[in-house]
Amino acid sequence: CAFFPSGCSPVSFVISFLINQYRTFIFILTFLLYASFHLSRKPISIVKGELHKYCAVWDEAEVRFSSQSNKAGYVTPRQLPDNKTDCGWAPFDKDNYQQLLGALDYSFLCAYAIGMYLSGIIGERLPIRYYLSFGMLASGAFTALFGLGYFYNIHSLGFYVVTQVINGLVQTTGWPSVVTCLGNWFGKGRRGLIMGVWNSHTSVGNILGSLIAGYWVSTCWGLSFIVPGAIVAAMGIVCFLFLIEHPKDVRCSSTLSTHSKGYENGTNRFRLQKQILNSEKNKPLDPEMQCLLLSDGKGSIHPNHVVIVRGDSGNGTAAISFTGALRIPGVIEFSLCLLFAKLVSYTFLFWLPLYITNVDHLDAKKAGELSTLFDVGGIFGGILAGVISDRLEKRASTCGLMLLLAAPTVKDTVPSRPLLLPTAMLLLSGALVSGPYALITTAVSTDLGTHKSLKGNAHALSTVTAIIDGTGSVGAALGPLLAGLISPSGWSNVFYMLMLADACALLFLIRLIHKELSCSGSATGDQVP
Image 1 (cartoon, rainbow, N blue to C red):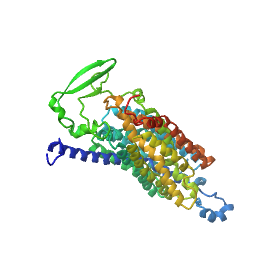
Image 2 (cartoon, helix red, strand yellow):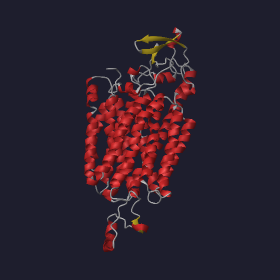
Image 3 (cartoon, rainbow, N blue to C red):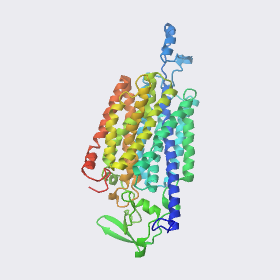
Image 4 (spheres, rainbow, N blue to C red):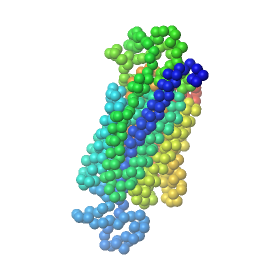
């Protein structure tokens, strides 16, 4: 006893050590898995500047002005057969290129939004390891297929749209799976900080995707998709071989002997699991049970019984229904807030490099590198949001404050030179825009997916996560589409649209913020209204 904490045996100490090692492994593995998803989404924004280049008008009367045009950042076009130029890739070399490029974004994100609602429900009923591995292999294949259009000289808009639609559908397997897996392994204590650090995978994936795509964008843009696609597929194989969905899969579950007795209470069926021996009440819970039964993150509980919601068949715990998940306090409000927060974030994700190219007349590679500053700021924003929300125990108020501060930073984020100001603005904007987005999709979703109103139903987290992120993905689809439609009238109008969206996101949090400030409970709600 002198070498082990009070009440702990050497065996439980070893188990605790092993569980912590597994948690670290799962943390790193799920981080890399979802980073690879975002790595494959970023190339399209980098390649846009190559699919449509800005070239000077080519005719004999303007040859004498070619040198001045080059100084201004334009490229003198080279005549190709059939009176074409190398100023872009058909069909994106036309005057309506913004709408066509926006269609690519919209096709991916619209399919992603629709598929997300179904993905959570399907994911509740399939092994996460198989489901996620399939999604990653399929996503890698269709990401690479888009790049093959370069090598096979494909100029059909339909080919690229269909590829984006299917890729958007299969990528919906990722988010509900990794959040559920991480939620299985980590308790509520310091959840904001842990998931804030973990959610930086989004920005890390975007940065790596930008650098990888930018390396080949000016010479062979097809590889800007094929290489990320190969990376995603390879990570899918790693997922299949090494992902551990739940602590019980490594035989770390409680060994307490239990017996069951069924009870009927109206239309709800439930089971009370009671300990057989009274002497076992004083025994410490094993690390996995201690993790999963934490009530406030400050200490463990030793329940005399655990209430588990029964399915209609009476054979086990039931996966929560779609409408049942919507009734969890806070799900609707946070979902609508995320819709507008993701609208802003994904507009930057898909259009920022092209905007930089237009404003500063940089080539696609340099514009892609500069755009990574927004994602670097997002890393710090996600961590900061997690730390503040853990300390204050107020998720909605943290999101609201960051959204309020973000509004002025999204106006003309990248003005003309000198680059010191746009660099600072990109970092700040990335932190304030991505902070609420990261907090809602991770800690808030996990809090709501394990809400007390579920009474122990462990099959709700994936569905709740999918509902919240699926609703957010509707905004992610609308943002780039609106940017493509509005940008021909001027980039300033795009930024006004983003500021309006930011205000709408804040509006949907007002009720939850008021609730937080008027009572001691958290916005995600530990109590059922």
